[in-house]
Length: 215
Image 1 (tube, rainbow, N blue to C red):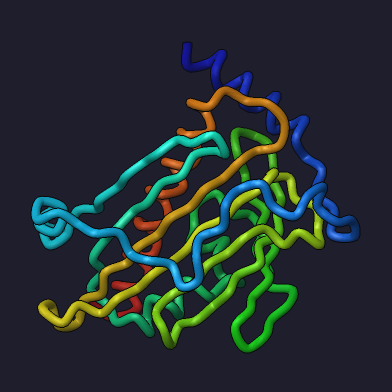
Image 2: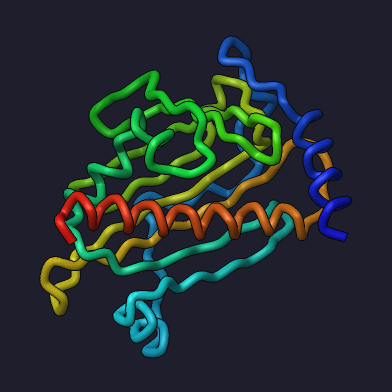
């Protein structure tokens, strides 16, 4: 069962490649963007205990417009250190598994437009993301850059980073993402991709930030 699934997914991705920085995306968004500023979800006492114990809290939902999940993790580093890693796009290929190329092609006071190329099961997927960045307020949201054509049909998400008053030196990191691929694919495969992205996001940010903070 596993091999046919991987083969089918590879064939789908191979047909989805249509990224073009010189052409607009076919639409201006099909997924509901996150609000600005985004709101961190409430956590139960058990979930807080999980975070304090060093583990990640992950949730996954599936709606009509694609997979949407959230990951929360406590990181032994300040928000400034963590933002420094998240915004270090030029070094993503050395920090984030699966990222082949990453470059920022436009920037503004609260804006960062970034091209990503990732490897997935022998294929390459390229897409363009428009980030709204407010590190002074501890949040960032994103959508696709709809002025350029991405292999992804749509993607929206956010980062929230909050210092923990009751745990000096620690920050609570919230990451949420919704992704929809171009063309038709079974919903459970799309959910699997979103869940894998959640896992990787929390793992690499924790690892790189704590190393930079000397922990």
